[in-house]
Amino acid sequence: MATERSFEPLRVRIAALGLAPGLAPGLAPGLAPGLAPGLASGLASGLASGLASGLASCLTSCLTSCLTSCLTLGLVLFGASCGDGAAPAPSNSSAPVGPGVGSAQRPPVRRLDKPKAVSRRVRDAVERAVAQVEAAALDARAHGELGMLYEANGLSAEALSCYGTAASLDASDPLWVLHGCYAFLALGQQGEALQLLKDTAVMYAQCAPLQQQLGDLAYEAGDAATAESAYRAAQTAAPEALEPLVGLAQLAFDSGRAAEAAVQLEQVVARDPRYRAAHFLLGSCYRDLGRAADAERETRLGAGGARRRMRDRLSERIDGYELDLERIVQRATGLLDARRPDAALALLERHAAAFPKDARIPTNAGNACLSLGRAADAIVWYDKALALAPDQFLVHANRSNGLLTLGRADEARAAAQRALDLSPSHGASWLALAHAHEALGAAAEAEAALRKGVESDPRNPALRQALAQTCTNAGKLDEALEHARVQAELVPEEWRVFAQLAFAAADARQPDEARAALEKTRALAPADPDRAQVEAAVLELLAQ
Image 1: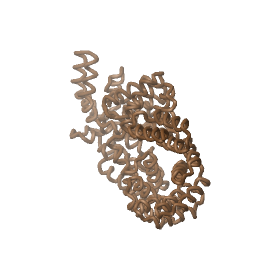
Image 2 (image 1 turned 30 degrees about the vertical axis):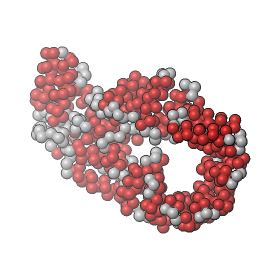
Image 3 (image 1 turned 45 degrees about the horizontal axis):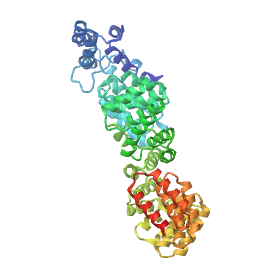
Image 4 (image 1 turned 120 degrees about the vertical axis):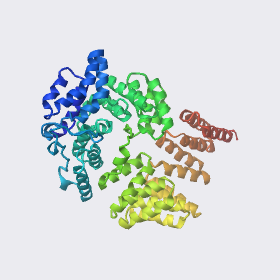
């Protein structure tokens, strides 16, 4: 099929440069007339050296001195897509194109397979990019840029073709190959993606993202040896990267070396606490090591996490090519879920003007601003969202929180009440209303709102925490303890929850339960200095 041919010439070239038996001589009949002398002159020095000093020297010489000559002379074949198979000189070469390589042999420009299936915004951008490529058909970067536009907007078959052409024109850049691999994966062709990276792993040994992706694919295919080799190559090329450490930890864990894996993963989560997949795997390690409390905490912290791809210098640029609304919204919500509100906001701000009638853009931008502590900016975005879709109860509830942060308690109360008018069972809206009442000095109304919230959403830990504190302040110590117990059941991985339970138990004169809760805090956060202070305060309370 077409997508499978896109990278076949790259494989042929790599095999030829490695002097696979019988393959290099077989290239000569496929050359355009007049290129055979170029082949002889381009390979002469490398082959002569190889014959004189042995196979090892020959391989080294060919990989270093013949690569440029072979590319310049157009030894890369474009298969069925390009005349007699002769390729043009690479974009970064000043060498003349040999006889027989005219305009008929230029690589074709990949156009949209189904233009009517994409938005007008994407279609117009593609048409402009295609025109630029047609004006520079021998420029690898031009084909690659078109590929990035296709990739960013989910057009994987078209992206694959462009990356294949770019890689064939300029083999010095491994990222054309890597993103071609991503296109294969998006098309569901995992086998092709793995084979492509295996074919290019030696040539691109210093490209950490490529090696990391090879490791991940090899691991998924059950090839642990290749995976380990690739992860170590990625680690060597990028010693500060976390992704290779996670890959090596996974292999160690699978081999029964949970302690070794745990050490590696502890380094990862210490440097990036947001790396959920590392937390989840660390939980598995702790479980094997008999550390049940730690395992429970890490597993919950890692819930829903996925292994990361290493970012490369094309990644940020590809992000800027996103033009499809659904992909933009999906990516923004993914960034918010991954606790990257700054990146989500930058993405949404970049595209807001292009989609002035879609409420999801300002809604998510407001959420990002609120996460960043920019309450005033959040209110501006929420007002825009409500102007487009006034019945979004979540937006009203979040807007209430932002208004309260700004000290506008009356408006916060009105916003929370509007959220509840639209969705009476939404626990977070009851919590927002309670906070607004409390800010206005209406303690009884705040407590009533919390009780209605718990009744509507009994598994909301924030509501339980707030009601436990309210009951404590009102002297309802036994009830406070009940809410603290439920909260601890809902959030068993957070030591501060058990600290609150310890205080509630101490207040209710339940010393055994208080000490058990303190023991739980020690297991969850043995080195946290704040925890030690909390423990001292609880013990002082018990001694009274």
